[in-house]
Length: 270
Image (cartoon, rainbow, N blue to C red; front, top):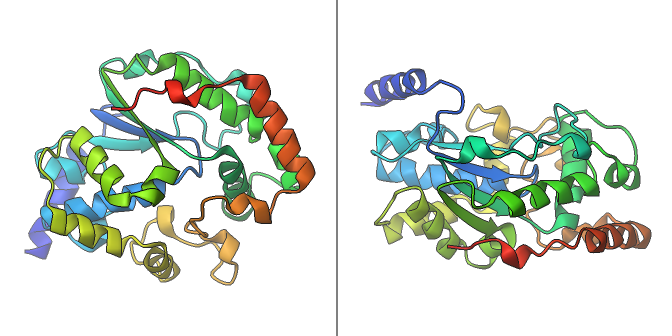
């Protein structure tokens, strides 16, 4: 049975390997909590459709096995590897015109702190202090705000759009997970499997799984087991930025946010 499932998984991966061929995109700025959401979705689908636990991060293939549309996770050109400056980000989102899009947001200060550790401990794309980091054109506050500004102006481009927040996923994990599953085509969810998925994807358990490289996947693998800040699953706290940002850092971020005048209440929630 296990071998048959593995063979099916490989066939699915091979069949759906063309670039930008997904039906649904779950988009987030780096370090906005998408790995947690990804494991929640993957665990639920693996339980429902009897896929092995080791495949729960294969969220581009698991939905297909259950007759659902293909789902891909992306940072939408805002990833760290390319070091794209905020003023060089494309504002054209027409490629999503026939797609469904979930945009996951997070408190900007928490995002920047988590992104700093990603850049310095995992990606090795930045050297310097966190104060330096938040001021850079390639990784800092201007890039985060530009990313959200682009999507505020383009949220009507996809054929369907859903905005969720990392903080809401913390507040009511069940509600947000069900909402996302419904959005990707899982019309009727199994409440028992939802609860199992939430328990499995607790931060304490995910950190243990990451420490032993349970999934054999770089998405959820520490770069240095002796350094907690190098883990993909670091702390999972809301408001944890207060431990890392100085008063001057916070003032700089707040002033920049105010200058952009972004109204996040204008994101269409469905």
